[in-house]
Image 1 (tube, rainbow, N blue to C red):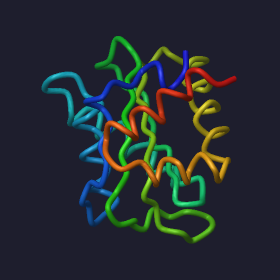
Image 2 (cartoon, rainbow, N blue to C red):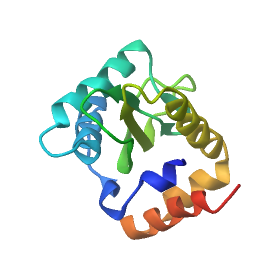
Image 3 (cartoon, rainbow, N blue to C red):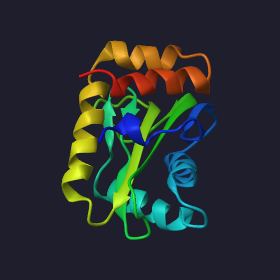
Length: 150
């Protein structure tokens, strides 16, 4: 299973206005959560962020967590209108967020998803295409290509 397999057009947002780490995590929780479970998903994301920032550098972060309220893994992607500080080791603020939340028992699959995203996020050309997409539909189309590439 890949990150792109878990996305749908409704889980991809372009040019979100958010002014803080907390605001981004709240939006991601809304996108990731089943109906009425956003608080549980936000807690999972926040708990992981409490261990250390999930910012990978180059303006990209990978918020993730595990939650007992989920039966299936879920994913979302958000591009901010303006980057926010997110505690990245390179000191750069973050504007691209790929997020996953998986069921608590989803151990190997969780790590596999993280590796898939981190590998793609290490490519500056990939990040440039994500930033250049004009609208959410273009952003979704770019992310969908991840499932077609080795």
